[in-house]
Amino acid sequence: MKQTMKKLVLLVAFLGFSSIQVFGKPFAEGPYLGQTPPGPIAQVFAPGLICDTRPHKGEGHGHFSADGNTFCYNALGYVYITENTDQGWTTPQCIKSIPYNSFSCCLSPDANSIYVFMCGSSTKSTPNSNDPSKDRSLHRCMRTSQGWSLPQELGPPFSSSGQAWGFSVAANNSIYFWGSKVPYGRGCFWVAPFVDNTWPRAIKIPVDNIAGGLKGHHPGIAPDESFMVFYSKRPGAPGGTETDLYLTLRRPDGIWTKPRNMGPRINTGYFEFGARISPDKKYMFFTRSTGWFENPYRDTSDIYWVELKEYLPESHR
Image (spheres, rainbow, N blue to C red):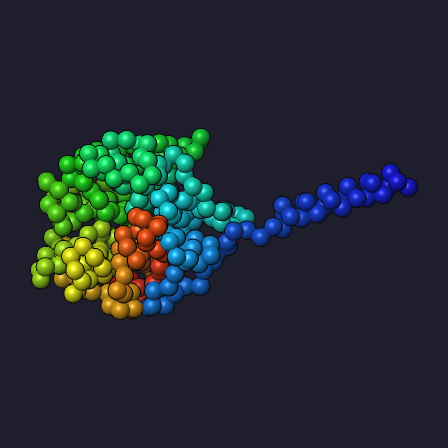
């Protein structure tokens, strides 16, 4: 009788354990991590899952792959990734090969590369390192059978002499970026077309972003390159402080329209920056922060998303 009871207890325990494994609730399910789509007013993306809205927590630069099944983002100085599987979205994992204080992460369309902006002279950056002698530049991590590779500097035309600070990637793998130094010129936008598995040159984008003192930074390109969102200083704000997001459209002749402020349903008295456009062009993701998203003891930041339908003409949706 005791043996029978013992076997019964073991069987129940095994079934209970199995049910936890089989029927355990996944991290998230459905497109865009199962989140209810926003309207024209920006909302925090995936609160409690991706974004921790408590003070002095920080998430930013959220970006989906072309098929919408991979999502990467920055959180408190590290890069995280989650992927949609047959069992739902995986719990976000920190990519350990990418050093602390790497930021402005962006996925390649096929999700086999992650681009990050980091110190170019070392792949072993230390927390809170602001060594001005270390140039910062664009790096790429590759997906391998053993996991993610160490970041490799892309070099020209993204070399430290040009400092391609803010950037984003189009569906054809062309990289749009903001130049902060010679030879690119501070406040100018550039595109590096993807040719033969590399980026041989950078071409200046003729956006009228200087008129009226407006200087653009960190371009977020649409997947089909039909429009772009960038940040600039908020009107009336002191230099180097609060920022707003601006939209410019690419016309059929290749000329970009005069940028326009995206308005109070997106822009606030805080810092809005780091725009990324969803693969279906329906939504924009961006960072809203009380500072520059660099000091968790001082700043609080979250990823927001907003439906773009009311902000785009029908020809660009």
